Length: 185
Image (cartoon, rainbow, N blue to C red; front, side):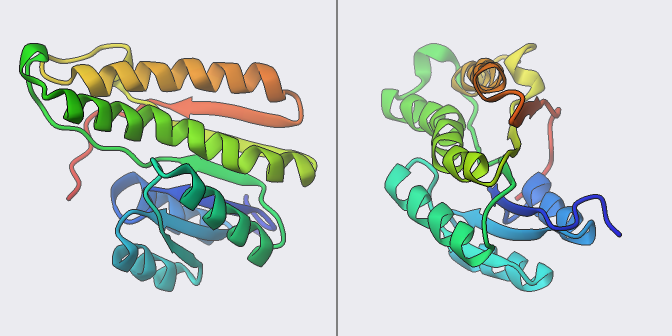
């Protein structure tokens, strides 16, 4: 028996790094997993490794994410867990950030988590509860020079997660993890 037997999960940003490792671990512990990533080929590869589902979705596109989550919930016979992990950044001084790039990073790292919670919470509630886990970052509390939009967004993830914990408890648990620097592709 695994720790996650009978769990049905959606993992965003599941193609590499923390997301891929989480997909593998969840599966090893008995969960069925839907891998969501902007890179559809890579999501397919991970899904094949874990006998899961794959969805090529940009989490900043709410309608596309909602459609993928609804399809995964149907194929997995409900959802019990979401791991909002998709994210990325670049490095630049605040005055040098192009406005469009600042907005893209905040939309991906914070807006993508909002979209993930909004799309999955109705399924978790319909199933009687579950877990929302979102990737924040140590940068949300101890930012480094050059990562202003990323650290601002990750601080927002912490606050959004706290709101979700207040709003959905005790039916749904909501937590954020704050890893340090991760070397991925």
